[in-house]
Image (cartoon, rainbow, N blue to C red; front, side):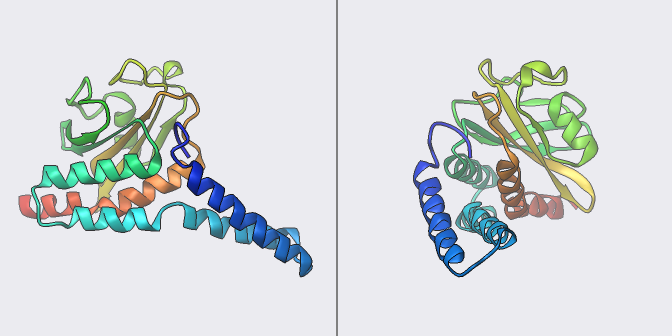
Length: 201
């Protein structure tokens, strides 16, 4: 997936499993469509069932919310191999950092909800991936060396209540596998926001 060979060991195991299956399937006379189906299954397993289980447990843990958010950010960053991960709350007016994992706090810990790539994700309710932030006029700089960014919105009852922001110093860092992985992490972490909404109401 992302940076600096963080997934090298896992990727090698996945590749070995795929090659082993392909050899057995070819010997049994399997066709190309069978290959595609099993490789998709292997890829889904690669995308982190263990990660989402740990995130779900952290989100529901008996601990202060900021600590739970930090555990989630650290889990996503470690298992995804990313440079920086931040979890944000989104209100009717603002976006505000809850916790992060990486080099330090963002340059803009609080900003209006319509700003930046986050504003695009909030308005659409869809994941936003920009693999070269220098070419996107909506980019709101958080770190000077960021080259790629993914914003994953968290929705409750159709409203965006939070985001997961993932940044990389590498151009083209986020592929479709990253998108699926991060959206699964978002789904597993949703309790972090749903409990807050229930308490507020």
